[in-house]
Image 1 (tube, rainbow, N blue to C red):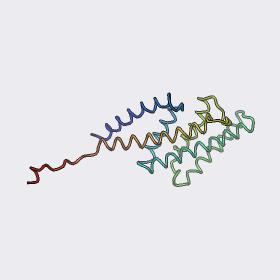
Image 2 (cartoon, rainbow, N blue to C red):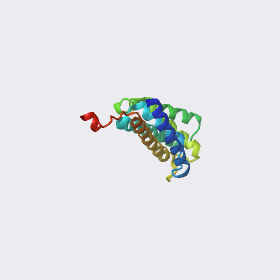
Image 3 (tube, rainbow, N blue to C red):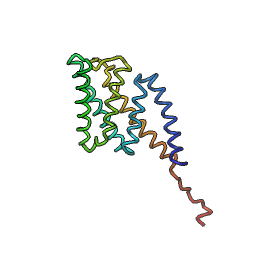
Image 4 (cartoon, rainbow, N blue to C red):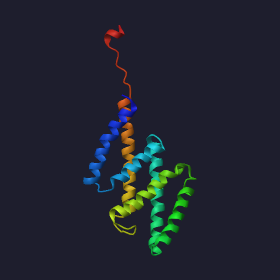
Length: 172
C-alpha cells in the first residue's frame, strides 16, 4: 500500500477516535490535539519527533501562561496585552536557540493553543483546578503527539512489505 493511503487510513480512523475520546472521556479541545498531531509530523518521525513536538508545544504553553499571568497581574487592557504578547513572542524566538526547540512554529502552536483554550473554555489562566487552560492545553498536546506517533506506526505497518516464508516445494 502507498504510504499516503496508509496514513489516510490511520489518521482518518484515529482522528475519529480522538474526536470521540475528547467528547466523552477527556473533555479537552480536539483542535489542540490536532494541532499537536500536525506538529509531530512537522518535527520529524518516531520518538524524536514526538519528543521535539511535546517539548516545543509545552514551551509555548509555558510562555503563554506567563504572558497571560502578566496581563492578569497588571490588570489587563489592550496596551498591557500588546506589550506582554510582544515580550512573549520574543521569548518564543529566543527559546528556539535550543536545538530541541529550533522550529519556532511548534512553540507558537503551543502558545496559541493555550490562549485559544482560555477563550474556548472561559477559564482564566489563574483557574486553580484541573480546568486550568494551561493544564488542559498540556494534556491535549501530549495526547496529540501520542496520536501522531500511533498514526505513523500504524501507517508504516500497512506499508511494510512482508516476505513470504519459502514453501517446502521451493526449498527442494
